[in-house]
Image (cartoon, rainbow, N blue to C red; front, side, top):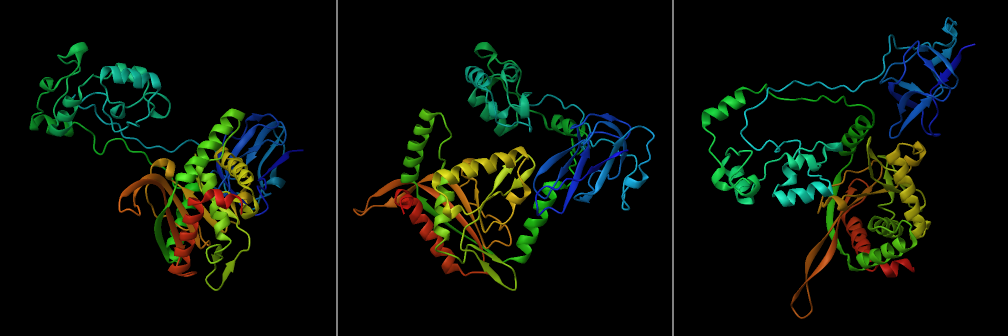
Length: 446
């Protein structure tokens, strides 16, 4: 008798999953436990394994189908078996093939040499240590090189094949749009400013005319996590009155505490407390005093929570995910740090329980590591508030004697829903959070 393949239930709150793509087709022989397809909830991605060995007799739903959990999506058995009884009434697929990435490209005609061959719009700025060392020796700017390593990483051979150009020549070439020869008159073939030559206007026109307009194009279907995030962000902005306030907190004690934790962790060979952990801990403790911000706006009512279930924005290969640290206000700093790391790793790996992505009462999103000084976070509705954490920058502070001292400060950006609360409570929360971060050692012993 043929074996049915069910859409698995991924968490108690998940009612349906989207089939991203099939890795098998009808007629294929599969082993028990072999991945048949990849499915996606509103946040996480999972593989559906074969419940038994045999031949794929039928695939009942195509890629991009949104299928209710526990429905039969395929059948496995012996060739020739009747599977008509297993076919769902809303079967919506014929001739399913394995999913391939949708990519549309137009080939651009090669352009005349009018600039260094290593200069490319595909430059990522990432380079291996050996590539950086060689680039320094040759006088090559690795940020202008298109790398051939993994994820566009510049490797040693990319630098070796790039023309060496002096800083003065590079600046002149960029400012004047001049031709750069592959070999210059400097030591070791280094290109000097005198080696540059002007590009005639007709040469530029010919070079542009020879290109196939508009060049290489890649079309990416909007689906899965990207589609969910887009719809939620748009709905958030359309249905809430969002306002953002910005401030900064003295980061000296935080940085000192982080340095001591890092040193202790390295000595013990374990993961240490991060600045993000410090902010999450301080936010959870501060929110207890401001129930207006630890709440949901539901149009006809406002729900305030006694405990803080803290959302933590995580950048993953599939897009933005927001795991929730439940009862964050009751956890010690060490416990909160461990839970944040566990949830973050699971979200990035795509193995997180979908139920762990729901129920947040306030969210923290941290772009400090990216060097962002200020930004406007978008509410994770129906939550009333979201805190944006920015990088640490020296800030001039007036001293009592009239002098000025530069003190490291962490930027904070709070977006809140003006439908649910007013500016004064939001500002008071920011002030309290700023004070708790500046006196973090005191907060730890409260």
